[in-house]
Image (tube, rainbow, N blue to C red; front, side, top):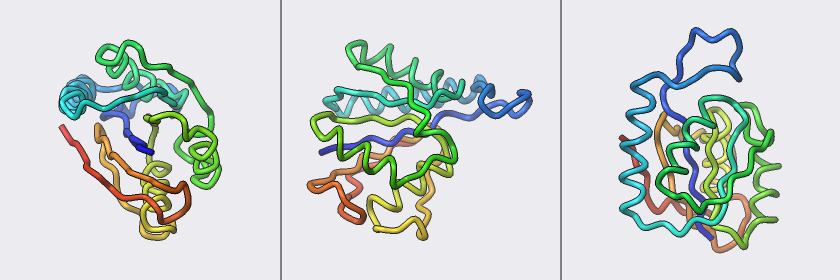
Length: 152
């Protein structure tokens, strides 16, 4: 199973609340750059899970332009302070899909650490506008392997 972890682009810090923060023009440009690089990898995607926060939904919109047949699901599971263990259960329940998850830190970095290292203590950093492809033959902590990472 392939899982693609995507962190949203650079967001404006002037919003009234964290969920309302939108992408900056630089964040939009970096997202579009990484989406083009991702398209060249010829991924077979079947389901996209996206955080309900504005900047994640904007990032998802850039993916939808390039992958118009992708099924999108908005989920409160993948907000910034989501639980990586609950997401691992979600991944296990969705093994029939090639999942792309568009979310935030610290969640994505903790999830990547859990998938690859078996613990969230290592905190592998995922930068903004970054796609990390993880291969998992078995959905369990520490059973993932990073195949590649794409940055703008």
